[in-house]
Image 1 (cartoon, rainbow, N blue to C red):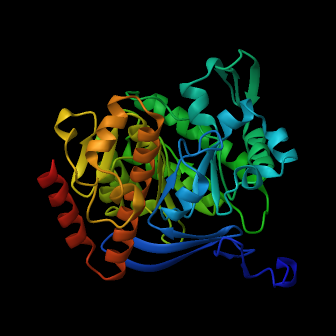
Image 2 (image 1 turned 90 degrees about the vertical axis):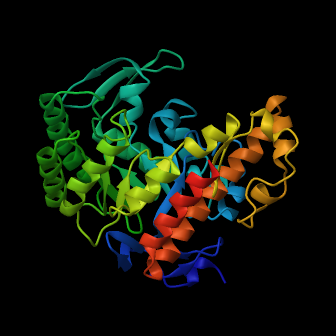
Length: 390
């Protein structure tokens, strides 16, 4: 039966997810601040807490999309800055959008490009209208406005669009944080207006304000007044350190709606995820699992391992005997040590795959623990295993 003959309110997509023409969030269970929920989208459901593997340039580096899916990921992330520069949003649209181009059938979140403009682009100029910048690839000049960012995300066909915002570098003055927060609020209104009504897709606002509790509250209140489908906590993991990051989450979380998903952008280590879920965060993304894999590092239930280390040269054990996944079970540490030390591409591929699988296993463990009302015990046990293993 063709999908067109199924009522649009609820369709089964080819990847086995449930699709809907209404973007919504269901909160199933709380355990302390930790939350277990489901984000419903036109491209399928997202189980939360969720970790989104980063597919910056329409690829989760060193992995096939079926490996990402089979590892347990419901959603991946794409990047406006990189994709607008190469191969170009209009070209991707002509090729059928990111879903068709990549072969990924589930939800895709695209960030607005703002962070990369601030951190990667050359000769950037920020105004009320937007930001003009010089491409780090070929030196061409581009302009990114809230309206253009939303247009690019629509051309890409992503499921969740992020507002354009300004992320200030750390350290910063309160004055700088307030100026960027107020500009981001004005851009948030323009982004939301440009997004309009796209059934089954969502638009998220981004809370800014540095590490100042009052600014964070003002930002959250202003975004709620505008009205978004979800709310991100931006401007963290930019050098402030874990404790300041967590304390900023703590002062921000009470001002976020309980009936909308909460997304902590660009975070992080397994410990970051565990501690942030304990503080009420639902969604995460980070390049760390794949970037670490390309540099010979593995994340496991016994902590972080550096496979370059000579102590693994004759270690016949798999990476993680406790997790039933081929990347973690089928290759010995000795073999991975050989691949890494030899500079073999296969080593980077296996370790990236293993790290994505471990991150998804960690998220599933947290979801199960929240469902069963034992999140604090799971949190303590997980941290204890990391400490003992290291």
